[in-house]
Image 1 (cartoon, one colour):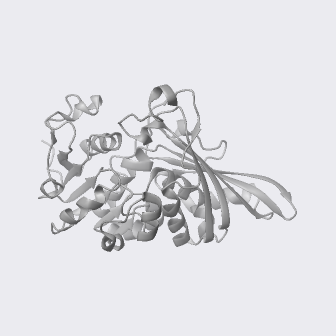
Image 2 (tube, rainbow, N blue to C red):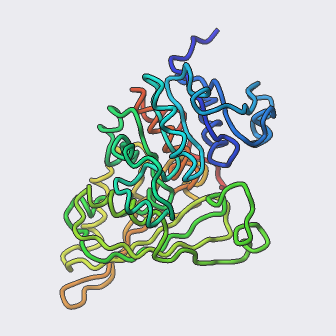
Image 3 (tube, rainbow, N blue to C red):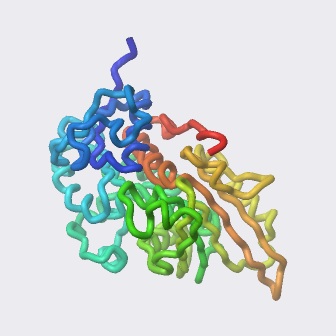
Length: 354
């Protein structure tokens, strides 16, 4: 008989795509037992009602539980609730002594209540809680996450763009205006079809949305400033694409001509040496197919010719929006706050073809 797992976990809001990814990872976790899944949808149904791959894998059912009831007796709670909903539920979970929280929504990623109101369209209901949360990007905040009780898992676009630009911020090279285009798959829009996201209008189509005003902009700016960026102005244009999983982000900036492609390649390689989930390919540029279905991200660089002492540089990054850009990174954060090996249940490379 296998030994009892050391930690008990509950998922609150588990019927969406991110919740399903999180549940799959928890069910194979060697140290954490998934005990409860709370959801207002599919109540009383087996978990396979949201993810057919779970058929016969677990006897757990979706339960209609208040967050505090779901968290009772748990070591950790993972929140898969929508933005603006999670913020209402955190205080009642926080009142339970000792339980740790990893939140996948955008409600606690920002330190500025004013930025939250501007980009999320409402006043934050509990601004006093913003300072309690550590931003859950392990490549930047690993030590702080290990000591945290509350972690805000980063957004999918934010993670992709931050990983591309983080080495430059740390090297003091990130300053002023940076233009970024991010292309994303349909699963980031969630389970419920909308007029602009369901298959008939998504397939065979490319469409910009929220150009220059996406809610991940202040999150990225705060994170890169913490890493060393100066007076950063992010000009971000998101694009919806006819693929299910994945994000490809390309950032454009000007650097002194001494920063050749070879030198920047070395900077990326040194920055991510030893990082378990960030790869820097040498013979190709990052691509979605190489990371789809996995918790791995790829980062690469291309540089143009020098002109008047400067050269245009592009930083390219790719990841799976549901895994490293979502539920996988939440599991990574959970592993850290519980004092476990960061990579547990996340080391699979994903399928090929994707």
